[in-house]
Length: 327
Image (cartoon, rainbow, N blue to C red):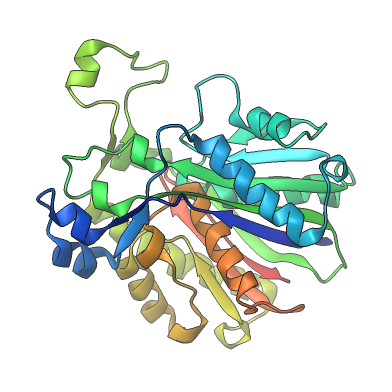
């Protein structure tokens, strides 16, 4: 358990592509629309057009955050991007965000899949808390539609594209993570992975023909692990912060599957009205998931100064992060 305070989220921003892919659209391709809703809670998702990459979505989300706070490019001195679908393998897509926004600052990527934004958020907060950054731009963005197999009925309907951003600056001693935990378990790597494209499996015609450039997932064990993880880590961070479930004002969980969220919430005994849900409209947007939910809640006026937010991200790696954030 760690504590990281003295940092505030100044503004949030979100962006999803205009192209809406409804379950009915997938039904025309042979998918079972009702099965998708019953098993995932997803009704539609967004797919980016060919000309837009992850950095393009990230830039649009970042601009909305900057406009909300009245922040200019010269005010930002750090750019961190969480993604596992970068524009290219090299260089870091954060550098594309930095130059497209006209920011003069260091920029780098963090790859922790669906837990990526949580990792990036903690990293950016550390820069601010130590005085190494006055204002950090932290973005989560993924174009998942590029790495899922359209013929895979169990995986393809789950994922969507999007981006979410947060601007961080120094805050009061009461703001920030009252407690948080980060973790990883590499023994579960084969539960959720994309085989081709790294140094272990070079791109080749044979590998593409075998579908090894697509995301692979063993859904059942991932489901069980996620429910246990959210319940366990939530109790840990609340105990470390000396808070109870009743002290939580809002619950922001990674939007992977409605059944995972419902099972975890039931196991913890949390009131459903405190849980923010948008996966019915966006699907699983990976690193963009948490910041998109955060932005939706913020713009809806559901977050006020002093509120306690439970934030939890989890996914491939296996990697996770859970914390209690005081707004």
